[in-house]
Length: 183
Image (cartoon, rainbow, N blue to C red; front, side, top):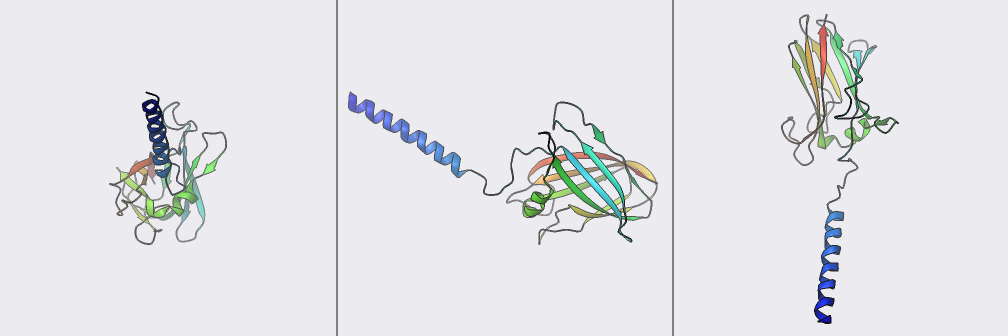
């Protein structure tokens, strides 16, 4: 009986060790933290002809998804017929300090894409940065059409191993609907 008990204990220890090894081997090889929270989406606008900055529009939700409502959601103002360069920044301020996530997204550009979905407004958006094959969307050029109001949805997708230049595959890291006013 003692031998059977020892064998069972050894088998349990072996199974436990194997499960620890499999958990360790599933660790993501990249620095992207799957549980990372994005609490701030910032759009920095500049005139494409002169490079002069003219807008800083933000979404802020300090406690992240769920919990309290966002503390800030700016309306984006654009001039009809104008072309605007837009740089996006993503951050996490949920821990009380601001952690810029933009550089990580850029470094892992082959796994990320930012998609834009205008609604109710004439607004063309073209990504001006790439991962060498597909757009990333941290740097874009916007062309505003006729005067009007609507919105633009900004979606950051995480697409490890499945990026194909569209927003279909992958997981959504953050999605924000900004009101837009074209003057």
